[in-house]
Length: 325
Image 1 (spheres, rainbow, N blue to C red):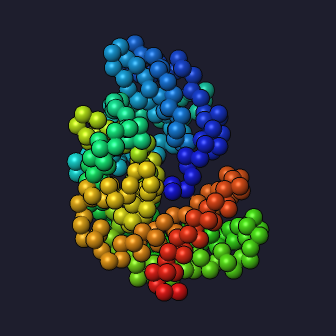
Image 2 (cartoon, rainbow, N blue to C red; image 1 turned 90 degrees about the vertical axis):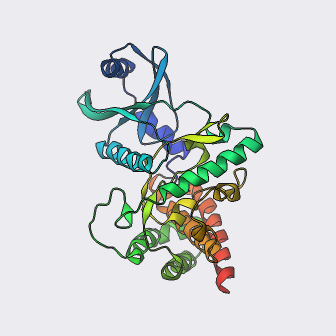
Image 3 (cartoon, rainbow, N blue to C red; image 1 turned 30 degrees about the vertical axis):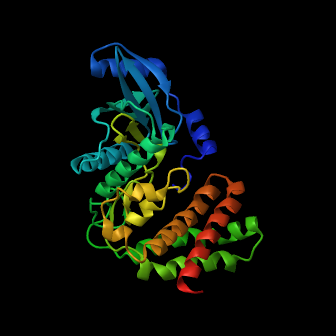
């Protein structure tokens, strides 16, 4: 539930437009490392950067190429904070502006973290131990306080009421009511009612202190050591923001990788054992799914709207049961 940035159609469209000449990449990495470099493969996952695994003699590195220097700086800042609280992240070796065909790009070279991603670990006993360790790292991230809700790093100073931030989120769906109701063939009031349900519960059930939320803390971004039964690298802070821990936890897709196994290592026991935990998780999931509507409409993914609506109604049903509606 990351607003669809890893939707295959969106990724393919972005990456078809962005392709830096291989000789430019090899020349840059060779310049930084003072050794001959060769591209091994392009990582076809994230939508907003080009990402390559580059071989330099017997070593490997990861090169990210961004059209937005601020995104590279944001991720490095988040990784630095994560490292300071004991979360393993790839080290940055170099960040450089590079001009390619008249376009200003930012190249970031980081270390390559070797090992399988969590979703590639097949031993269920080992996976369960790794999930607990992932939960511990997740809770460490949530000890990093932020001054206000919204983008990371904060673009504002001073306090900002969470209710205002949430109302800003809900305004996304309100601006799309006509399109959503037309696609679903339901009255706009039905869609508006769900948005109002979320808005009405915010003040009572939401967290008040923002933290650094990864917002894409998922198995594919957790590199593991099967021998150590630990996560050895947390990747991709591109979606991180200042948010509630529940906004972050709600992105975890329960099922094959059980949320209960993740939470077994989560060290904030007051949060996990809160009597309102299920309510807050349902509210965060509802809000997260609501935020997928404008993304889907923006990128022409109208066929995804019914699927999103189904998830929205599921979480709305959980909330209504919880409050006795």
